[in-house]
Length: 151
Image (cartoon, rainbow, N blue to C red; front, side, top):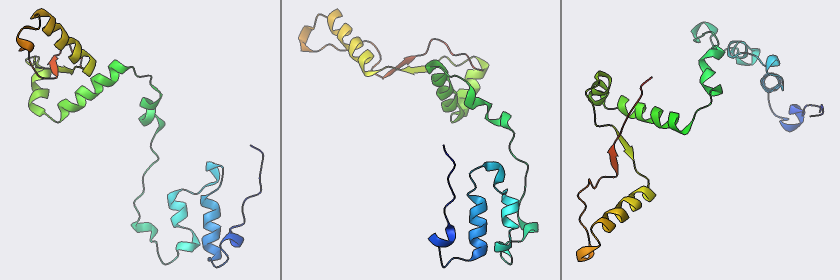
């Protein structure tokens, strides 16, 4: 991008307090290094009488390692596993059974196409007798999951 002159806030906001415009100019600096931190912004003269720096909470910036997950490549299977693990978090008994290895009730959802194929296969097996075949299989839209590898 080519360099442009910054917009004149005093022309855009002629009735605004000059201290507010000065702070706004600092907060909207193009380069993040030129922007004030939250503590520096609260210490700005514009907030004199409003903010008490000693009452404001302060902490260290979050390290970039906290966001390393954003750079990881995730497959469709990884996402399925993560969703399954998240579901288990809301069902403590199932989570405990799963961790202990006694749980064999893990499920995978069948797609509509798979449900259609299954129903069609059942009809073919029964030869379509009596116009409708009653399935001997489960009628739920999920079947027992074969394996799960917790992390």
